[in-house]
Image (tube, rainbow, N blue to C red):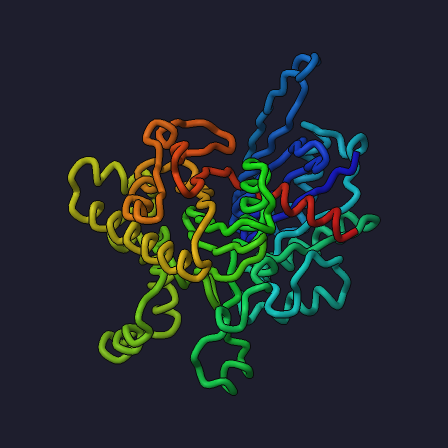
Amino acid sequence: MSVVLVINSGSSSLKYSLIDPSRELELGSGLIERIGQGTGVVSHTARVTAEPGEPAPTILDVRHSQERPIADHHEAFAVMLAQFAEHGPDLGEHPPVAVGHRVVHGGARFFEPTVITSLVEINIGDLSVLAPLHNPANLAGIRAARAAFRDVPHVAVFDTAFHQTLPPAAYTYALDAATADEHRIRRYGFHGTSHKYVSEAAASFLGRDLAQLRQIVLHLGNGASMTAVDGGRSVETSMGFTPLEGLVMGTRTGDIDPAALFHLSRRAGLSTDELDELLNKRSGLLGLAGRSDMRDILAGRAAGEEQATLAYDVYVHRLRAYLGAYVAQLGGVDVIVFTAGVGENAVDVRADALATFGFLGVKVDAERNGSRGRGIRRISSDDSAVEVLVVPTDEELEIARQTLSAI
């Protein structure tokens, strides 16, 4: 059994999962929050076999939580190890053969999972200029993990890597070429680990050859992106130079005329940092309706709230616009896939996003769409010309798989 420890390190958080990729089984996981912020919050889950049996044993998730000060990521790793030692699973019985790290930005340098060396660390740090909120935190987790697990390889899996197959016409902005080259401005795309996992899982579920499928994957969570996947390769994606471009999100604007920012700078006196905060943290659904969670938007819409209804309509309008564009880029579509929190759970969003695509032969079965099943499921009708699926994403499993492939 080859077990992988998957690490997703944020600026004040550490998310971890111990995974057996061969069985697609998570043995244990946890989240350490508020690192360096006084009292930290620790949540740990151990997956235990309650009743051994055939053909399938009874598995229970046993959860533990505590609050305690956690100064930095090095201490967070010590806390993680203590949680495994106290609550299981025992890392002595399930030693990780490698540690896989989620890294948000690989720029144009990294296009596959990469074994981490000192030089790779330097490059990840250098790319922090492109992802100042993410790469420094990812790097802090890498350094703490390499100190805690010195005897196993560490592998970086990049959010941007899946989109390295974008053609130049898709990743190039019509900006002065010399300026763009000097400052590395191009479309990079994000959520790549999720888009890769989901598109491959969809092909497997359908029993069809991935290389023959034209897919559009909608990763709809608090952050949201859409990717056109042709034969397993990303050929177009909605997020761009940063994760701000594209769809309407929980707190991000998505697409906006850049001249609006010039106007706000000149007329409202907003600084660059203030504009950054406005577009990334105070816009999207939150800016339109005062709430960033789609569940709250749907509740407000059902209650007849004007702003919630408008926020919902803007959100769906943008989804339809991108879907139509990607159908055109692909020259048709065989499979449309919804994933992530909103995509997996918001029945109305799925139905309304596809409501105008009857001309393509897209038919959503209302009963299937309304089902609250947890696994991969088909929500299109049997006579739909396009398969429509809900595929729960599993980025941790994908990172574990790519980590093993790299070593």
